[in-house]
Amino acid sequence: MSKTKVLIAGGGIGGLSAAIALLQRGFDVEIFEQAAELREFGAGIQISPNGNRALDSLGVFKTLHAMSCPSDAKEIRLWNTGKTWPLFNLGDAAVRKYGYPYMTVFRPDLLRVLGDEVRRLKPGAVHLNARCESVEQTGDAVTLRLTDGRVVTGDVLIGADGVHSKVRPALFGQDKTIFSGMVAWRTLIPMEKLPQKFRRSVAVNWVGPGGHAVHYPIQGGALMNWVGTLEGNQWDSPPWSAPATIEECRKAFAGWHEDLHAMLEHAPSVTKWALCGRPFLDTWTQGRAALLGDACHPTLPFLAQGAVHSIEDAVVLARCLAAHADARVALKQYDEVRRPRAYAMVRGAADNTARFHNPALATVETAEAFVSREWQSDAINERYEWLFTYDVDTVAV
Image 1 (tube, rainbow, N blue to C red):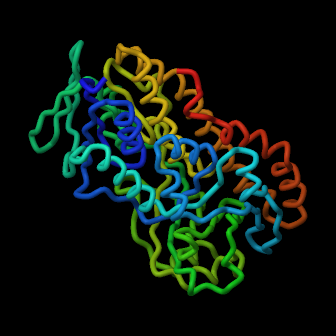
Image 2 (cartoon, one colour; image 1 turned 180 degrees about the horizontal axis):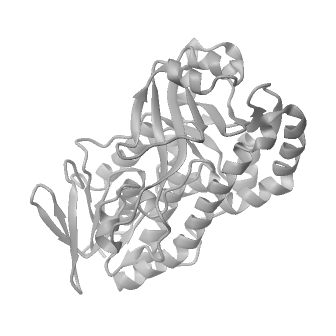
């Protein structure tokens, strides 16, 4: 197995996770990252039990858990009045039910832990300033050409280079970035600047007509991750993010509850992100190459599963390559196992748009019946149980 060389385009969460899973199984791995350093946007991420199960398979769960914040619960609050409904209990209840916690993490912490593990397993595996230009295949090899003129050949290529992937069009032709019409406003707020009432280990989801906002603690409670999303926007072309002012953000959320504005008063800066997607593909693999993570299943962030599914992809991919001697057969099996689940997740996240942004949320009276129906226990179990119980180490490959 050590003679099998896997090239990975992209040194983000999915690419590094794939590298770890492959190195654990004796593959030779080279990662090519276009940036000058391994980095992630400084924001929070929610990792559900299925994600932590996958991180444990990679051997990094305990390290990351020590840096995280446990989530004791999730709750729904109404955008203008602040009326609160419990969503579900987490904390010890999640561990008892699923074997792993639900936790919130600083994205750069996750990337750093993954990068450290890759370098521990294979120093020198990560190549920076390495931007993909083209892909070529023969019957027994795949070649990655970089923009600086370097040419690298391996047995397998994994495109883990994100929603704006270069490997994807090289394999399947050019398609369009689909702007959802929604913009997310993101900021990190020092927790010490916020009133005591905000310092809870709870993920709060404010829902309202045409938008929602989420906030939860990260970095051991040192920071509050704040994200607000609104519909009805226009965004014509890249770049798909831009700096914004606090006043712009407060104006966009005019009329929303004073608690949200109280947090924004202490925000050091805000960034706007266009929420984009890609068309579904009929397959993620072509010959000796395959896609992983946001390159093949970018999603709206309304189910807290985007990064988690990239990590799941990574472990299942490595298991498939270890289980099948023919790399092309292995990649087809990976595609058959992962694509239906990932696309079901993407659909589920899109379905949540109507739950989080519904016109029925305009008033307390209409919201009461809507929330009681959409967030009662049976409905919650139907939306989340199949996600949280997934086991990357036992799913058939």
